[in-house]
Image 1 (spheres, rainbow over the protein chains, first blue to last red):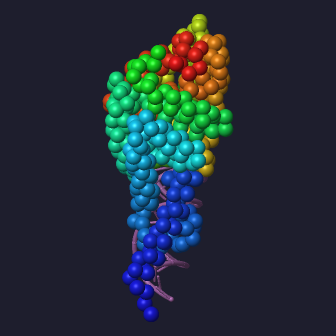
Image 2 (spheres, rainbow over the protein chains, first blue to last red):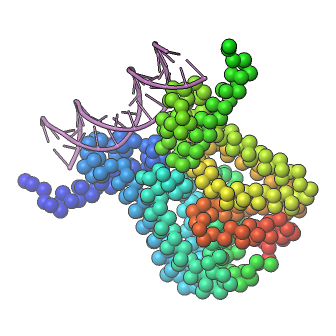
Image 3 (tube, rainbow over the protein chains, first blue to last red):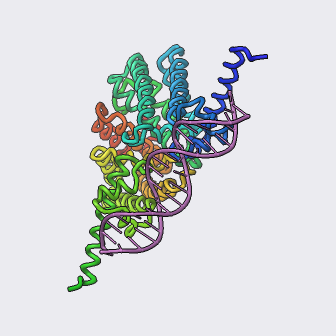
Amino acid sequence: MPRTPEENERIRRAARDKILQAAMELFIEKGFHSASIDDVAKRADISKGLLYNYFKGKEELLAAMVDLRIEELLEVMRAAAAKETPAEQLRHIVEGALDNVRERPEVFRFYLNLFTCPRQDEVVARHGNRLLGAYAEQFEAQCEMFEKLGAADPRKRSLHFSSTLQGIMLMYTNYSSGFPLDDMKAQTIEEFCGDRNLQPDGS
Amino acid sequence: MPRTPEENERIRRAARDKILQAAMELFIEKGFHSASIDDVAKRADISKGLLYNYFKGKEELLAAMVDLRIEELLEVMRAAAAKETPAEQLRHIVEGALDNVRERPEVFRFYLNLFTCPRQDEVVARHGNRLLGAYAEQFEAQCEMFEKLGAADPRKRSLHFSSTLQGIMLMYTNYSSGFPLDDMKAQTIEEFCGDRNLQPDGS
DNA sequence: GTCTATATTTGGATAGAC
DNA sequence: GTCTATCCAAATATAGAC
């Protein structure tokens, strides 16, 4: 007896997920360029030919991966926005970012690598830019939080905040062993999620 | 009449430099993986075959490029060390780093990309790590500066300092248009090159 | 839907003439 | 020292059988 359309759809989804999962692992482990379609197929335990039945090619795998990441980012922002006060919202962002990098530094590393890519590496750059767009949106929301907090120049304050956060994540991924991540987190919260925003230079 | 050995040596150097120059440009423009040996030869205006007469392969080109960068780093540190007071030394580091990223953001971007590479991308990772080693040395010197400045926990302070600097450079390379680099520079100097080091949390 | 086999392309590297 | 021609390996992608 033939499978129902629903059953077929379910199988297709499962296969697609398995492939995407394998691709994500390998891209993170070996990098986008160094991981081959063959690697992905092997890890997903299917043939190379079948992979092309689900994804047009390597780029579409990357695209799907970035889509998921953007969704994750939006989710963090939604959760932050749900908090009552701007101070709590910012705190949520700090913790979301730093907890994430602690748990999966390679993931952060991968995406950082993605948008430090030369723009001429068109395939990669395209999706790095999509991700950057998501960050830009996040940034706007963040500015509003600083405004509500009463910062003198919310935009600048927000940039300072993001720089600090990015710097910490970057340093942590390189020096993970001796890096006092908790200390840094506490300092950052102390610096940006309190009433120091009211005094332009913090003195 | 035959060329003298000296003359030969001069020609060889010039050719080598031309090739290396071409390679650096292309690696920065297109990325290490995306730039081909053929591209490099074309840009240097020589044949592919000749290139192999000067460099064993693509990796050796990258190695030479990283060597130059490490030399640059050391030079900045030497210049900083030559200053009289630790405050001036740290200030020199901030200005060296931020002026450099302002002038050639693509270069910073390239090296950042280099050591955000997955370690399994062995060729690239190898040289990213060499560069990281140079940073580590720089970091030690920096710690001493904070110690002389009287910081309570020089090592932590130095990490905080580096995070901030790296974060600013990272943000600038992505948002160069609207990023207030001068403001950030001033704030960083204010924060780390003055007597605020004496008050652990700056309050 | 899935596999195997193969076509195609690209790019790193070498050989040998000049 | 320099070039052209060529080899070889890897990787993307497709064709066609089951």
